[in-house]
Image (tube, rainbow, N blue to C red; front, side, top):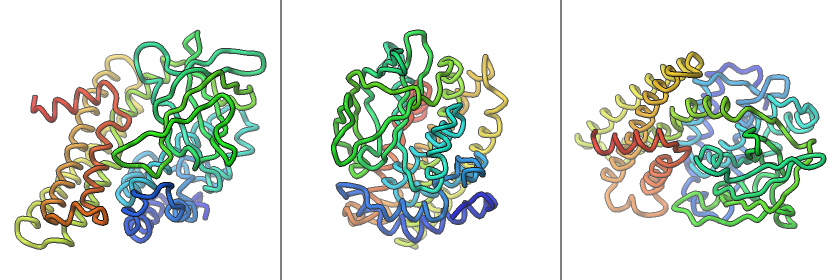
Length: 367
């Protein structure tokens, strides 16, 4: 289904229906699977939700940022494993849609927006200070990638990956590579599976690049890294909206497992806090386009990082409340309490920057 003609609230409603009817009921099984079952991804694709970052010309929605964050939260509150594979895809869609490499866009953008092609990415390493984790060296006809990317999700699930690397002149090189297939890893790439607290079914690996060559035909952009980094710092400082999705889901489940006065009161207080967090989220998102550089950006990042920390703690409080209301059964792997608690913990470090880390520690320490 193309969502290009659908209003934003209709897209959000579709996401909620899928989260409630498909994602949440099977979330514990997907969490424990060796490889992520496709039912959740297929349902999202059928509703056109792989195209929320894509242009209408390719069958996408180009959903406004506030609505997109609502969709992310809703899907994240349905099934964390499905969400994390699905979520990586949208950044690649944005990069392909914005690329001057029209040949790649002409070939891949429509099937990417439909969900026929799923994409993964590895880029968080370029946020780290110090020597580049993955280097791009100019060679005849393209770029040579060398180094180590410590986190890439959907390996073995997604046929295409975007890889960010830094060139010697400081440029940010965005490339598109093939993922693993039935023959194994591409030449010059070694995938190292990660043993994680959760997301074991999502194909999350570290990638080692041993002089892997990428032709110019597969280069999406060569950007100014300082400019990219400045805007990425602001955008990532707001935090992952799926944390609020976890909080919402935990409260909704808590209302079904206990109706005593204490549980009802806790649910009401958490719901009020979630509503306030969403209002603040919308304010910050509206402000981000007005603060792209200089002191304004620094002030924005500090404020947004504090908001991110509050959302993280809210997700953890809500998951803890669900566990308390559920009692010992919440520890059963077939129950949502333990999974939502682990997912709330995961969002503490997902897309964590130095600003976010400091704000989270301040919030926990009460300073």
